[in-house]
Length: 350
Ligand code: ATP
Image (cartoon, rainbow, N blue to C red):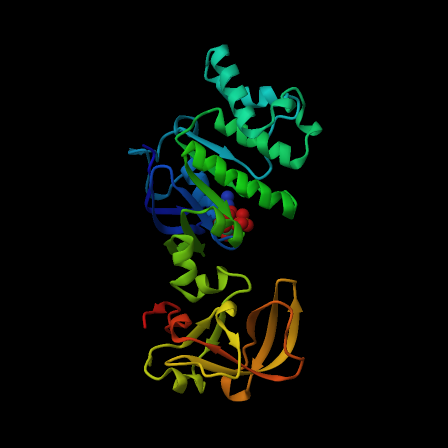
């Protein structure tokens, strides 16, 4: 079993900067955990601490029931896949994949068997005699994965492995990584700043900001019930509309909720209609400032009237039929789709 448990993990870099400010995460055997957050939030630092490439200032990291704080990277039974692939340029694909196993003194027939099996799974058998410079970016990425797979580690660690690939290949590789991980059922921790990658890959999503965890949950939990305004604006594209309630007339529409200072509504939960918002729902009058059509859907940008604050509101509509620029429209949302946050940015339950 390879659970990974982080208990009150902290990291202060030499010089005194506290990059990780006390993080608790429990990842079950075989689960795919994604660490996501903006640049500088500490996700790579945390991954490198699990790998043993950074020291742990305090707290505990456990891999498969064993505290690894003082255990060398090579003895942690993990394999890491990096963004830049970190392949040896002068070695063939075969030797790149075999290298780590030879270093461990594994018998040659077993190395051969493991490399061939990984190459078969990754469909790179035809590339085994090539050097990295003779490969495309996507093929290099597969070789980097192959090198991790042959080790049959307890845990895979991925540090933004797809960020050097173009958009189309990124999506294709994302699907492949997920299929591969399910097939091998190896516990995985994956770092990305791309929220879509995070949503599609994760069993458990850990949303980080400024060295702390903002929320841990399944992707849909995080999407449907963001714990903070930060998570609300980070997960989802276009992001959730966040409207300040202080001094806003919307407060009257909302009635009770005296503690709420911010109202959140996802663009996809707003509907343009002249109809009624229904019981406890909300109606916003908007003047249309801009429209983006992307084919299957369109984004309508509008400003509420003066009395409703200054924030621009985005409404996501199906298809291409959008209101004229400068026209006045009404957007409604049902009560169940409203998110309320308090002064500290934390979610308030209705
Ligand atoms: P990115 O997506 O840009 O890679 P990240 O979320 O992975 O960002 P980290 O690389 O973990 O962020 O860095 C977290 C914070 O720690 C940043 O403010 C960074 O400047 C700082 N940091 C990273 N490495 C060191 C170091 N060796 N010494 C001092 N500070 C560091």
